[in-house]
Length: 360
Image 1 (cartoon, rainbow, N blue to C red):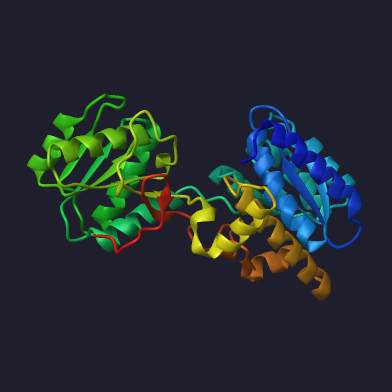
Image 2 (image 1 turned 135 degrees about the horizontal axis):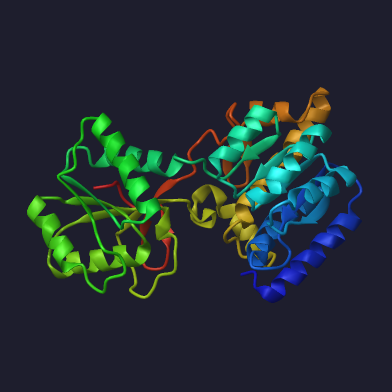
């Protein structure tokens, strides 16, 4: 695990790598080096830095402060360092100011975090070289709908949400898509979040005949609903969204509860070898570590392909399926991931994992 003391060690390692390499592709790694996002920045630095060192490329570390009007300085730093491509970018504020300068210099940017639909629309309209390894807006709802239509289409379904903007909008998107496919929930409701018990809610679900329930809410509320359903002997298959990736407290989540969420890549079979290698080097492959490693891998491969073909670097980014250490990655013409990164996962005691058995 990368802790506060580990951040300094990671940054020192990156500095040594930047000074020690003088060949290969020059890749910028843009990530916070201090402040409240420093831990996440250290994850980006560790993953991207590991891959860049392994490939013998040159690393240029640029601090990201994630404040309004800070992006232009980041863009200037990347251009001055003559990087060929840059990865990381945890904040939209950085990209908004940096992308016009990167466009002029022909430097593509791969973000592992920023999901803003408006920013990508602006990038495509203005010809900014932005590529996104984070999910686009709507990807979560699309995957939830896919899972429900595949596994629950013949069952009585309930949709409930916690009244927050995200919970309501996500559940409404799911409801609209299901109804377009001829499925009408047997029960819909808004529950009051943050309660110590939800017995009345699970009893209403039982009276409505629901056996499958999607919950647009957070992990703590879903844990209460699952516990009370079990205590009342009400068989419910419960599915949540990406908000389930949160601390397992104050009430532990019951095993078997499922979520459509971004995976911890270290638990996926295709990333097992990379995770093992990182751990052997003392780096826990958590958070942004493996996605950043994959982004740096793509950056190096695309730059080498562009140089070999004498083409702009954006061309291989758009026309290639990259076999990265965490699985295949390709970008669409809209610079988004060609495959939805959300997965159906199941809670088993100490983490979310791919379901061990076919969905019931």
